[in-house]
Image (cartoon, rainbow, N blue to C red; front, side, top):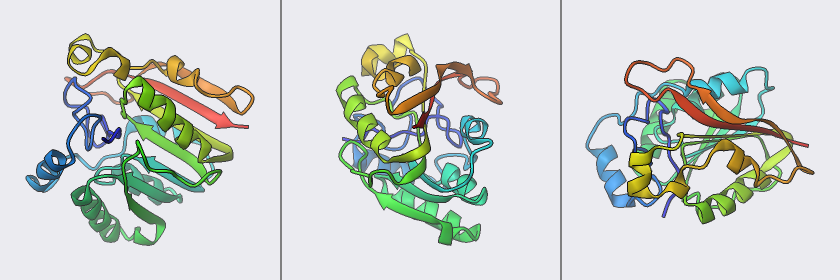
Length: 223
């Protein structure tokens, strides 16, 4: 079972359910491969505006994008000077992302990893930025996934975790525990290790008509 999502990444948050993403929690890999294979592009390819906002001012280093889909955020980060690892469980999505990277002349700045974030173990103390948009795991999954991702952040690095706000209709289908507030996610971080810079619901930058207008945003810096 995968827990990764892209929500409105390039733009992924088209529905109210956490399944509206590549490899969403509780979804079946084969069904996502079929979705990717059935269209030349499943997402817009544009960077998440929240990522742009919350990485402004960071010194580029090594980034990890969890649930990278077709690579929109990875390519944007690479274009800003980051070296980026993109993780997704869809082979079709990763192949497409690699094509986009080559076309943009960024292939030498990115690495693509196929894996399930619910079980994949990133290297510890490695990344200057770990970004995860719209994972929406169950509560038990969230605790263990967050612990592994947080442990992969290097001292002085940034963790950016973004989710959809609670939605009653979606929660009725997928379970309320998949919609954790940013403050709930932040509570899992050891305050001796982490400085929480932001943990709140924020308006989505550039949200258009008919799109979700807010996100739960956690930004923290490892001490």
